[in-house]
Image 1 (tube, rainbow over the protein chains, first blue to last red):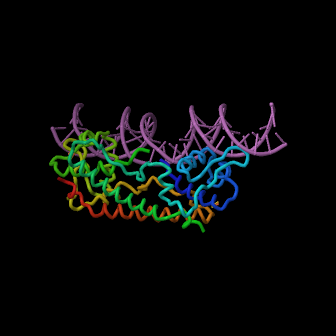
Image 2 (image 1 turned 30 degrees about the vertical axis):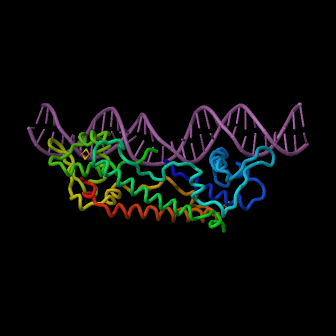
Image 3 (image 1 turned 120 degrees about the vertical axis):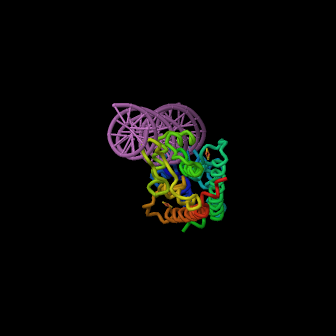
Length: 133
Length: 133
DNA sequence: AACTCACGAAACATATTAAGTTACATGAGT
DNA sequence: ACTCATGTAACTTAATATGTTTCGTGAGTT
Ligand code: FES
Ligand code: FES
């Protein structure tokens, strides 16, 4: 599958929006992210559900940042985008009766969890203002 | 995309093969892994290229483990399977001129690398005999 | 009231990649 | 000659982010 670039895109555009006074329209954001306005609405909708941005219809409408960059971390945005797995690596039959297979899956699961924990911990340490220049 | 279960499957079957005296046919392995013989040949072929297993055609043929479990680590098998990325998370446009986007991508790349390094280091510490019961 | 702008949402198409499948060729033992 | 088993090519399927089209809805403008 294609790589999930939503986190990177959202971080980028949130910082961009922090520099703006006017709301940013989906069309405008789509041009910056080199994508489609519907993709923007779909992804930004996840952030709106968490209260990080607000959307306004009609003339002068669009998307507005609802929090200070210093108050949100990469982890907040990552979590807002859903709970899909971070890894391409998966386990084999998890309902197996084979003890060997269970041991293999256990070892892999532990290793993956430790790796993901490190990643998320780091995400949690970085607020968005650290990335703004 | 579906999760990549090749590592889990190969670890399982390599340990299984260590218990065997006869070579294991692709059909036999496919049954154990609940998959197709061609998938087995395709994946095992990666391990043969590294010398971890050998394949023999014809009567009494099949796949045979070529090394001691204690002499190979999870990392060896992981590497043998190719160099595809471990993460579903990707970066946005890597040729961007925007400094903010560059900073975002740099931060994400560093975090992902640290996480992957930890994973691979752990894989490197575990030899397959540790998983055999 | 009519018009335009911008989001909301459904439905469908595309791209990517592991996995699954079919079919045939090749080499080895019986 | 026959059977067994791998080698390989070509095609299909599954899963999921992304991309696209289309229509609906609410809000401001004229
Ligand atoms: S285009 Fe504005 S921050 Fe990158
Ligand atoms: S079936 Fe033999 S090790 Fe799992």
